[in-house]
Amino acid sequence: MRVEVHIDKKPPFYAFANDTGKLTEAEIVALYAPPGAPLPDTDRK
Image 1 (cartoon, rainbow, N blue to C red):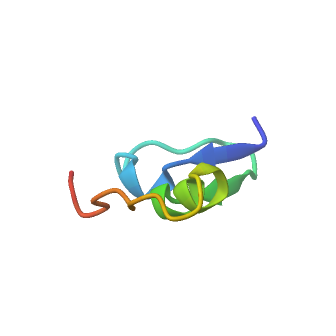
Image 2 (cartoon, rainbow, N blue to C red; image 1 turned 60 degrees about the vertical axis):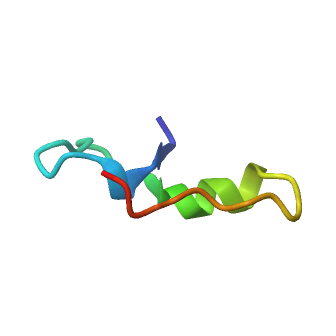
């Protein structure tokens, strides 16, 4: 695996042993959402 996605939503005990890139939910949306699309509620658990 090269990149962990939604890293801000993972449980605190979960981690990969290898060094990977890390993207938050907001970063994923910024990469793939169409321009002008509403952003998700990133405060939900």
